[in-house]
Image 1 (cartoon, rainbow, N blue to C red):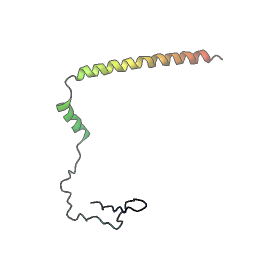
Image 2: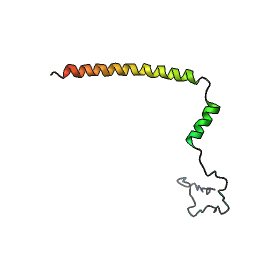
Image 3: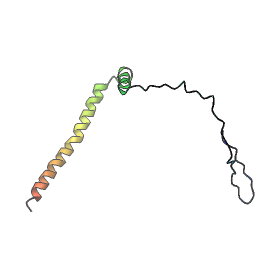
Image 4: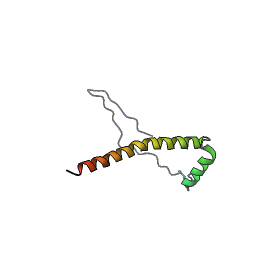
Length: 92
């Protein structure tokens, strides 16, 4: 529970807060409902692959491979051009 701010309106309207407010103690709070052990990453992954994995996994994997090769070809071309540039300028 938060304290109720008091706002007197005079020349200025600023909220006044009770700074002596003390919250209620939670003596009857019990933590028996908290689950103590966390599940393993491998168990979560296994459950996902068993229940929630898409049926078109191989199609998506092949599309990813095509996209990776498509992105890799310009990088190889740039590396080749950079090596040629270094070879051409190393004589000077």
